[in-house]
Image (cartoon, rainbow, N blue to C red):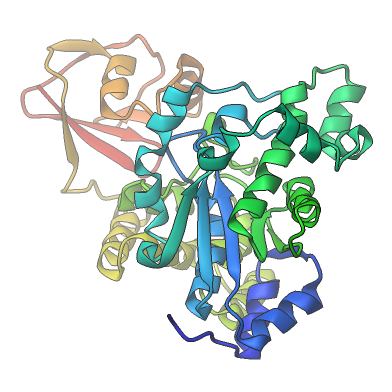
Length: 403
């Protein structure tokens, strides 16, 4: 068992850095200063195959508690992932099949292991307890809440006011997340600031089951590369399993106004350093591009290592600032003499061209070029030369197309 760290300065930063709200903050701080080992829980539903850095904010906070010596409990929502949480949605989230959820979570622990020391994590799957509950159990849990409590939530109220459907299934989701806290006897739960009702449900159900109610920490939500909420369905995510080059390039593409938010929530750069960066940006003594270089380096180093972060920093400077064509392009074999640009793109990176509308958007933005010539039509036919063809997408994504 690791000794519990009780240094007040470290605890204060954990309770404030990137934090929107702490329930019973003074009580939680006293618990942390006491040296008692706490059980600190966070859950993640496998609604897509990728964990992006927005969803990783809670896992980063878990790591902070792990480094203090507390017991971290990571719940993989293999049951709740099927049901679907609409806490952050403006419309009903469809149910997923068990097969889809199972496929999605294949690499979840590998991705979470980029942040957490998994050897010291208690990993639980909530189908262990949720799949065995009957109507009597669910009825007793539901009795702890009123329908008014649920429909008072901002996103649910907006949907009802606009005449959109809200399913009874959605009403049950907070019970499931709350009951997770009962099963693992959580002292603390960490979740995004869209999760307030679900986090409070954990406290309510723990009291109903004669347990001490958990404290909880709500973290900030992270916006995506286009300034909208980070979402896999919008393709504006930075994923933990992106290769180092893609990760670095995506971070360099974020809007300037997100730089400080990313530094606070997605890195563990010293807060004093971040404050200095913020001051320099406001006083225009620091170019936002240079600040983003430091940000991209810090995040890439976190998920890879310093050497790869340096490599991608040099790559960016040469290809973007000095406009050099990279020498270490990834080769993609397409196997035919003639193909459309869209066909080629789908073979190089299906994620970029996952829909015709997304590809058209790239063309409209003049973001696709072949051997330096901008492509304007998705159905343009391309002759594949024997010596290769350089495909560039956006500012930082390059491929060499060969037969």
